[in-house]
Image 1 (cartoon, rainbow, N blue to C red):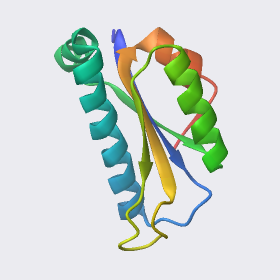
Image 2: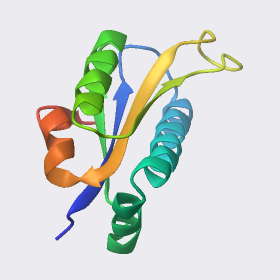
Image 3: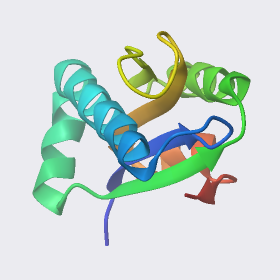
Length: 118
């Protein structure tokens, strides 16, 4: 059983190829993991030891990502919004994804538990 997990939430209301979406998810995963390693090193270490559980979820708006980010921060979770550089498919500055954690699964679920898998 995993006690820790990371959630990556990606927007599905903007046109992104599968490769572009995968890159945005990867940016969110790495960025929030690094922030967790800095802010909550014990959570990061346990998550790494357990096997780095991740879930990738979807939302339908930028505003949804901002709401989730606020909720995560209120619960003390490390999180990172990802804005695209605009070099390929979408305009610069487009907010595409949010990485949350890694953190104790029950806390992450308080933020993301009602979202659907990508």
